[in-house]
Length: 506
Image (cartoon, rainbow, N blue to C red; front, side, top):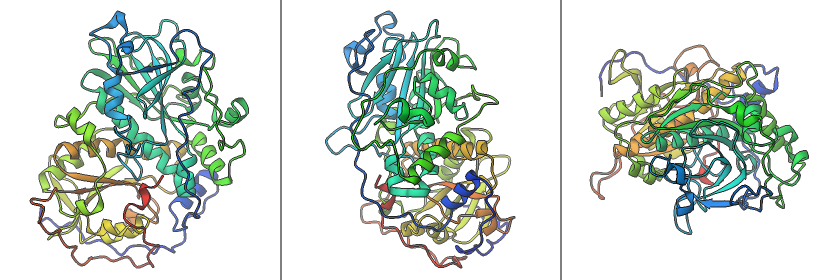
């Protein structure tokens, strides 16, 4: 690690410090999600059956197709098609086996609330049409025909179903759903980047995304399809066959011009009158996703770090907290920090808190690779206090931090900060897996005003997301690195401590 000292961390603001005034819904909700108010306990919300697997009225093709099976190959494109089975298996599919859960990356990065709607033109391993993907059965369910003269390739619209996340996290749920969608977009982009051209949009208008996917908008959903759970579109990924044209404006409008596609199956418990917090989260996410000024969004090309292999994507998981106690070496840590900073322009800032013999907060070295000290001292106990009291963070080897998103941020900034943070952390986690490091995302942050803690203007530089990192043990008997005495302990009374893995329960 470098030895240059910039400055010592300033005292941390108290957890009971007054929050800025919140004159509108977004500011109020953002302040509430960042406040120390603990979500109410609620009964465990079990996973419902996949809602799109029922019969469809569309007779243009099969109702469901195994995306890896022999019927999944478009005969006209054999050998040149985008292999959707491979892409989806490496990105969104549930792990095999009876214990496989949709949580290879728990704590904001979970896949269980995310749904993928596939809008397929020619050049794919499935026939053109609208589909939705079931990650448990690895099957694509056909919902309707394709748009006329749609260009080759696949558009994937990512939506979130909020009920299970809100059931567990209450008023803290909606930022986690944005992070989840960002992680899912990263998974798709990483899986497709070696065999297809990839473009990603994290700011396309939600109404346009809903129409393109053949869905009603959230405010109209339960009136249109009663007894079903609304899905809120937040992001889109475009896959184009290698060697073909990769248009900068994917054809969302052509898909949106089609009639609405087939409906999901009504399910008991998918209430048409949701509890107040669930209704508020849906309303807020719909509001955040509105982008009428540029409905088509901005599309950025995606690639994956050279070290990341298909095997790394297939095997990445969140490590147990006890496997994260050894600080990574400075070189791989600098690589992962550089990856997080570079995957998307205009996103949050990134720093990393490191433990070990010389604990400090590091930023990327200006003008080149490496790390540069931002503040001296052990920030990890304070981070543990800020992250729902998860005390294991205080002994983790390092914590990568995305920060920004001021208290008075616009809806576009709030959406972009969280989606890009999830997208970049998902990419960084895959890179960490490829480098042999252990990792675990950290999604929920309260009173985490990093800028104020470092002596800057309060309310302008909040932690949005985190990724705990640890070097693998050298031998099974290697003792864990003990945490040094914190240089800057929290001044506020600690929030109730969350047990190890508390954020894993959906």
